[in-house]
Amino acid sequence: MALLEVANLEKHYTLHAGMIDSIFGGRRLVHALNGVSFNVEQGQSLGLAGESGCGKTTTAKLILKLLRPTSGAIRFAGRDISDLEGRDLLGYRRQVQFIFQNPYEALNPRFTILRSMLEPLIIHNMGVSTLDRVERVADALRQVHLDPPESFFMKFPHHLSGGQLQRVVIARALLVEPRLLVADEPVSMLDVSVRAGVLNLMRDLTRRRGLTTVYISHDLALIRYMCTTTAVMYLGTICEIGPTAEVIGRPKHPYTQALVAAVPDPDPAQADRLVKISEGVPTPLHMPVGCPFADRCPMVMDVCRTVRPALRAIEGVRVACHLYEGPEEVH
Image 1 (tube, one colour):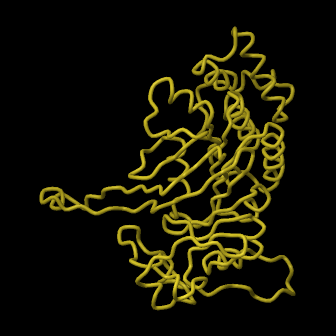
Image 2 (tube, one colour):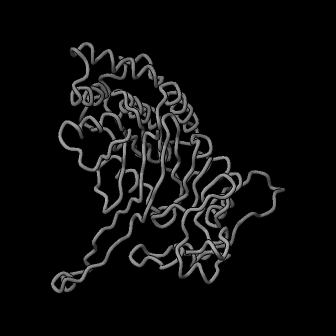
């Protein structure tokens, strides 16, 4: 059974253009997510890829129950999380932890590292005594290679480098022994020289603990290195999902092909692989009737502008594209 199940998830925001619209009841909807579905098996890692504004972070916030979905369901270990409140919600928050994109904003600048690390243990009532909690913090810092841990206890966030801070954030997330870890661009704010070390650390720790992970990134190299499954998102929908080696190695959807082709190749002898797509992203205020990618797709057909394609199994992946549908399969 999948640890995390997301079914037909939608998130819409009501946008009031101004006072006149408010007075006369006019409103517009921002379609942030439109029918997103995927499963993540226990111990597996899913990468959500796509350009800015495609709905990756909104999906993460819904999984973390920081937002309420407009419709759809999220199940964790077989249980629908939509009605969780009080202690049940607190218990869920302990099992699902988040690694923030910016480590400089993830920690309270007025708290020492020890105080910030003790906070989740206190909230979740973990540890039999203060000494036991301090020992847990020390062990967590050792696991992320901040040694000796005591030398970091009384330091404030501004005393540490970006790489050290991100290791603290990782240690704090793992401190409460979660089952699911959600990481939103976990190394994008770090120097290139330290990214590999942090990614190797995360991969080692999550594999050793058997954690299920969801990585959110526009960096396909990170997704390919860290994730067993990849879902490519476009304008609040999933256009292709499957094993990472297939999705990135042999992309099927024209948008996925364009993303992969845009990755720089260090070999100057390689021919230009760019896939020509039209500039500009359609606004989520006015969702296209047919395929969300139709206005930019170099292989657009008439059916693409009138019928939205469903995800369809093809060569080991699922693709939402009319190029892989026979005439009798178009609905």
